[in-house]
Length: 510
Image: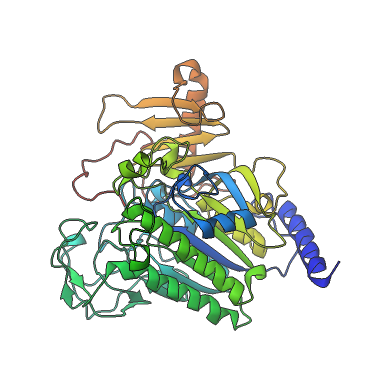
């Protein structure tokens, strides 16, 4: 056995001991000194059916992600924290359900204040406290302190003022990106400043919400150059950090294939299907460039990489055309982005760490993006405070193939309209209401036998419906979904039978 094989064998055995010692929240690890680089690549609006290696009948080539799947460990029961963008990103960065905050439905609108409280521990802050350089490149969509006259999307932005309370005040050393690709200001931001002052004004184009005509835009702004620019910055960050001895955390928060559908010229028409299919191919390429950068910089073996998406595939960017071509964005699951059904929040989730994570394997553990907080804490041997990562479970044993039992007992789902669902084992309870019914509907599905959620079993299992409803209410009331002292939600009186407000014309789901 050569030196490299010996190193990997030792590292794998150390990680196995670490995973076993950290199976319970809050326990310190039995191994120390393991600080891999951590890269999270989060695509925006992609379903399980959009990655061919995860759903072979798919019609859109994804060679870079396919290779990554073969090199890593895929989770077949992985879920975003919500069926839409902002709440998922909140959960990923805090380990806490976003419905515990003021964001009870929809997403953050243009020019809204920060959603993450300034005193809340975030994943990047946890890593920074343990010596990591931290960077977010791409989409933020979690609010900032914007300066201007008026409020909300009607604000007249003061582009001469700095942008306060952004990513660099929530644990990141560095930020570069466009806050939301289809929201103003239409320009790149770096830390708390505009890269190019948005002195021009925007005129309406496809994929941008109405009401933004005249909003600030950088001169010569091109939507089809957002993803290539972000990719270039992410690749540069990897190479720059590889030259240092400091471990790094990169959150590559992609803006694609979310609208506006703007594949760059090399990808326009490449799929032979539609613009969104082209954009998925460019998303695959973009992720591949970051993975290749790790190889070229010589740090791939020392880097834990996670690829996931923030929710399912969007239903309003050409879904019907994809289906006509035989491509099912949600694979075998019901629904799509914004839904409480599996297609809204069951997403791709693949982990790679050479020599530690078993390659080419699958895992059926129930996991959520929220779990990244507790998982990284376990990796570092860190003890999370009682008021941090309240809905985060350590999944490190599942990553390395050492878990022999279910690590997560339940999971709360949430959709664009604020509807709730609870998952326990194979059972899924949906507290589903239309816009304002007289009585909410309680629906129960056994996903082990009915993955497509076609047969409601609520009337056949009333006791299970009652116990799951009570458990969901307790999870809400306790302010946490993990063991520990009860915590306070940011907002009181959270209604698990939430009826969506009449906001359908205010903003389409993100």
